[in-house]
Length: 325
Image (cartoon, rainbow, N blue to C red; front, side):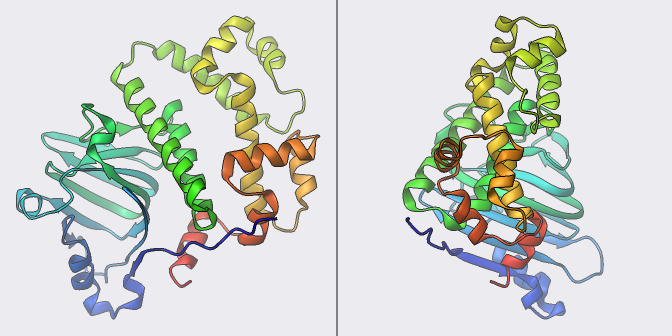
């Protein structure tokens, strides 16, 4: 069996490793190519960044205390990232932003985008954590992205959010081929979100109906009977209506299977004393060989490799501990 190799970050910054009086100065130097920063209170600034460079895409986990970030014309004129797009998933905390003339409020679970060729400001109102992706602006063609916010409750945003959380969780154990596929999936999901969001709220009733279906699926993932027939009976919809709701997501069967695979992934990480067999049976996988094939295709590694590579801890705890690794 192929052993997953450890992938180490390309860069790590943590104010916890710096004397309190020097933290703000050190962080300003680290961020100089991107933004200027001012703390918003008298406490020593706490911040950290863990960065993985993956060819043209850079993925990072970051944390910040209360602060004000500014990317102005001077930084843009002297910067080297002006042809890039910055995508950020707010995992924890509360943030407000200004993109041109537009002010936006960003809440946990939201994904927001910044064109690094344009000015922006960000106010971190309470301690926050992000997953960040920087990629070439050309990857999203001529779509308007600066200041776009994909809200947490919107189904396409939920899909991209879950993908990014899973990407970060398994990144350190992905080989080069897996990384290429994960980058490709990230771009496909992002383009799908931007195209769908551009259509506005014309299909809001369609989205609301699908949102109710998704919530039901999330609540009943461990039921073996969960499937098209159960959803039709519960919601009083036809088979054709149900399949239209999930056609662009690969179909209802495909969607439920992926949700169950994601649930298995999280339990493998969070319930290390529970056997793998018990976990996969809990989510309705009766054929272990088929499960292993589907799991590896989805995440690029086996369930055993996930269990061997991760301790039982929350996303935030995994993040905090990784600074010292």
